[in-house]
Structures are given as C-alpha cells and as structure tokens.
Image (cartoon, rainbow, N blue to C red; front, top):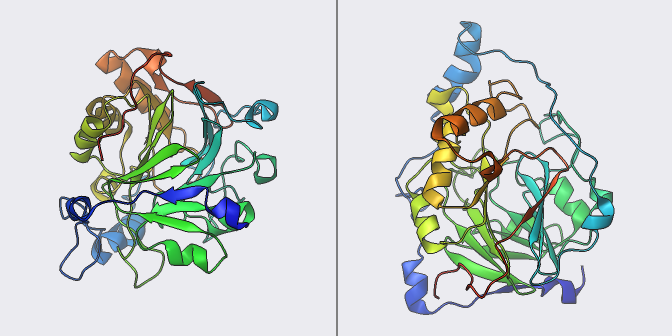
Length: 349
C-alpha cells in the first residue's frame, strides 16, 4: 500500500476535555465494557445452548441452507462512486457486508467475502459483488473482532486502509494494513467523508484469552447528501436514542435482523426483527435497511425466517413499506435527502 493511500484516512484531533468526555467504559480488569455493564455469555450458558439443549432435544433445528433473494449487481454503475452533492449508494454484499459509496468515496463495511468463515462456516449465498469485481476501495470499516465481521482473508485481498475500534490495530499492522483506531464518538475523515464510531451493545473476542480487549461499535458515515448508520453487531440498548439525538438526520439505518434464536441466549448480543424496528424508531432514521441474515448459519432460526418476522412487525406498526427495505444480495439502494442547504447531521466538536 502506498503512503499516499494510507493518508486518505485522517484522524480528527480532539482536545483533552473532549477526550475525557469520550473515555470508554471498562470493567474492573481494565477490559472494555458495555454501558450497562452486561458482558458475554458465561461458559455454562454456552454449554447449555451448544451441548445440553442439543442432547435433550430442546434446540430448534433448521437447515443450514435456504433460498435468499439475490440479483446481478450493476458493476458498471458501481465502478464510479457518486460525486459530492449526489445521493449515496448502498449495496448489500451479504451478512453485515456493504459497499457504501458517496461523495467520490467507496467504503466497505465489515466485508466477509470469502467462501467460508474461519472455522469452516460456509456461505449460504455468494457475495453480492466478488472481491475482484469491487471498485477501488478507499477504506474498510470494521465494527468489531468477531470472525464474521473481521475476516482477515478478505482484508488481505483488499489491502485497503482500515478504520476500527480501539485495540484492533495490531491485527492489521502485522499484515501491512494501515489502521486508524477510534473510540466511541470519535471521528475520522476519508477524503472528506466523516466516519464516526458509535456505541453498540455487544462484546469482542478472537481467541481464548482476549475477551473484550478490543472495542466494538457501529459507524455513522456522513456525506453531503446522505448520513448512514451501520450498527455492527448489537443487542437493543438505550444507546440508539443517544445516537439518534447526536445524529438527527440519519437517512438510512443498516440494522441486523438475524442470529437471534434462542432468545434467552442471543438477546444480550443480537437484535431480533421486532427489536430492530424498535431501534429504528429510537434512531429516528428515514429508511430501515435489513442486514445480518441469510448468509451464514450462526444460530438456530431458519435462515429465511427474519424477513417474514420483520414484515409482520412492519405491518403491525403501520410503517410505510417504502421505509423498511430488505435488499436482495447484490442490490443497490439509492439513499439521500433532497438537495437543500441543510447542514450535516454530525454533532459539534
């Protein structure tokens, strides 16, 4: 990677007073923590779900594969990102992976584009855009360290600068990748596009002894015509209201709707479809964009169940179907407010 490209990601310098206000919650051992203090599941709970409930027939059983809508992407369109002043484009690549294009910049969020994840979990559906067909990528945004969001084989193939949470830089440095680390509410810019790391209700681990040593979160991406929120992995928490208050003009909220079953185990780390729409309301966003379903069989619900539950909840709430989008893999959505002199959504520094 050239030095010029590395410097496309520029950290924003904060004053000491702001740094103090943005200090991260930590537990007694100095590890990162959620704002409500809840951590990952205990070994006993993992054993109950993975082993005991399976042996006793209490686990829900669903096939490892299911049909998921997919379309052929318009590669000619995606080759060039929209110019400043034009609406943004968001292309779902499967799971939590998106190509986000705005203001002349192409970003990838949580790209996991190989045939399988670490541990041999195979894809149910091919990536919406293959790695070799992607446009030049200005930066990759990584929400946290779990293997379905931080896929090192994909990142090594892309060889683009990375923006990620505190503590993750070492994973990229060893592979020759430039990384900008951010704490919650901290901002960097990628060729003029603002990227802010925001809280999430989750946890982190890649090995046996590194639980919560790296920070997890979501991203707010702001351009001249669109403000986009990608939650990363998260359970429902009061932080959605604060994100919406700090960024009151979010045009699209990219929210997870899968990996929720069994509820007793997953509800502290993932959203179900009903909770995702509740989060959407708390955020005050204009458009809901579904993600984190149908790609990898990680939990017990059928792979194709989440959109059905989402649609039932949308109808119950009386939401306009144009505001709740479930894109096909490879589909591109155009996102942006009407051209007017409104200011960006970011809070004052």
